[in-house]
Length: 145
Figure 1: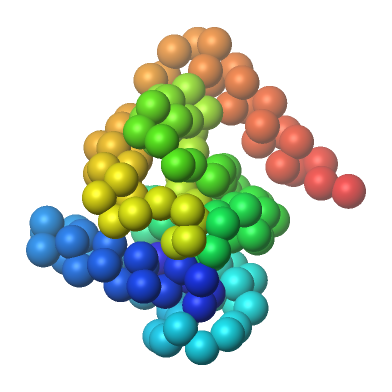
Figure 2: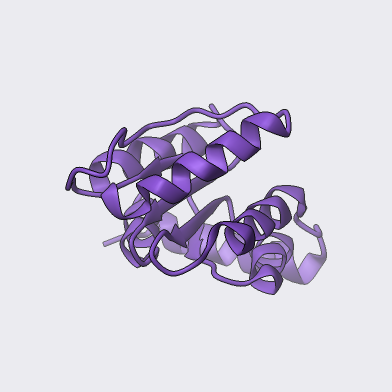
């Protein structure tokens, strides 16, 4: 997990629930609601996903948009801002989403928790059409210019 000040409170609540549910959590910060720059905390979380250190990542900022953009700059990361349960599972199942971005000022804890649980419980389908599409995403990632 990684966040700026805008997602700090939600990160702390989600982290507590994840730990209570038996998940391992690596917290890349921030550790307060003092103003900070989201790339400084989102990028390390995204790099952990890209390197295989962790399976999936949850990143936050006020809207989720900046966190998603920052995470998506890391090669090997497929990140999206998600504020509904359908997208939380569909993006994993069809698109291989591996980093979930949430807006700490957009979603409340109960919806955010449902989204995180759904994201973590979803699996890539492995259907040929989804594999083909993810391979095309990976090719775009390799050709960044």
